Amino acid sequence: MSVVLPFRALRPTPDAAARVASVPYDVVNTDEARQLASGNPHSFLRVTRAEVDLPPETNPYDGRVYAQAVRNLEDLKRAAPLVQETEASLYFYRLRLGGHEQTGLAGCFSLDEYDAGRIKKHEKTRRDKEDDRTRHMIELRAQTGIVFLTYRASAAIDKLASRATAGPPLFDITAPDGVRHLVWRVGRADRDALVAAIGALPALYVADGHHRVASAARARAEMAAAGLPTAEASTFIAVAFPDAEVRIEAYNRTVKDLAGLSPEALLSSFAGQGVTVSAGRPAPERTGQVSMYLAGRWHTLTLPPPAAGTPPAEALDVEVLQRRVLEPLLKVGDPRSDKRLDFVGGVRGPQELERLVTSGQAAVAFSLFPVSVADLLAIADTGGIMPPKSTWFEPKLRDGLLVHLI
Image 1 (tube, rainbow, N blue to C red):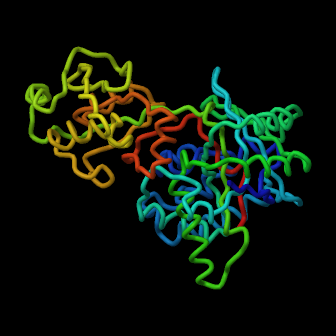
Image 2: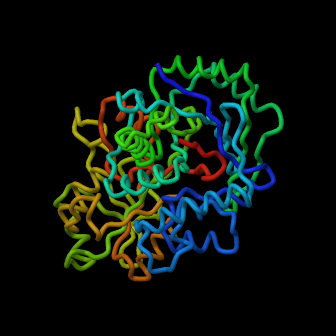
Image 3: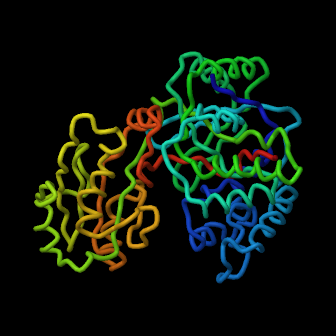
């Protein structure tokens, strides 16, 4: 059984939505956030990445940043303006990019279900990133970043979505990256039916936003310990999309140096790891292949197939690449902490990998075949954990359209 609860969203007025909506806080660094917010005093990045309003040398985790975020949220409520719904509601949130469209249910989901493992995860989280968003939530008394959930598609929910989205949306904006964002507020009758339809799902899955939901769980615990428990803090804001509509891009890798090897020596060392090398192209054609950009040329690496009975998470290309290439040949240790390894979302395209290598910011780049949604669900169902940065979900939700006050 799964649980969704209506909530009184804090949101922009329809005419302010395009000015307020921003990229998720964790897909840009400080410099990129500052550039995106420049010239737009209503950008929600001023709340989620408030260091953009402080001197450039400010540490993003400095206490002044969280205090600035509180001030900026209060200012935005007046200036944008932002309004809070008078009645608890659910919403449908549709993302449209080119020929792709996906429609999810936005509401508040149970942290008790998350803690009990009935909202399933597939990634580990980093303590420092949790520390940041936990403090951000507690000081603002708000969850400002939306978690991306998925579920095995339900005909009952699909039918309700079709009915609820037949009328004009509350928001209809097209972001600078070309993604169209449409949001509908659900009426009372359909709201109750949706609560029941979600309740019939056997499980929900965290697709994108593991740190946001983990931070929400920590914020609830810390607020309770401080004598500040609230019912709202026992839930987290998310949009749940049917698995059939979710699209995953690859999450690619670069390595800063060749660990003392020449390009020729690296190429000759693959055979000892059971990896074959051939002339290649910028993107692999199937699972089991990785495209590598080295010394101005693309190569195709064909990975050895996993042995029978290999756990699903260990059979992923990204894990085989780590075990067969990155660790033994390029001396990359823990991918969560090795500073020589960097990650590039597949949405940026192979040209970004070429640019990083050509500019000298990396010595070699690896372009992977995307993980399937079916693999993600299977791994989560068995309690497995994917390697870090295995999936890049695109298109992404925007921050600031729906905020959950706790």
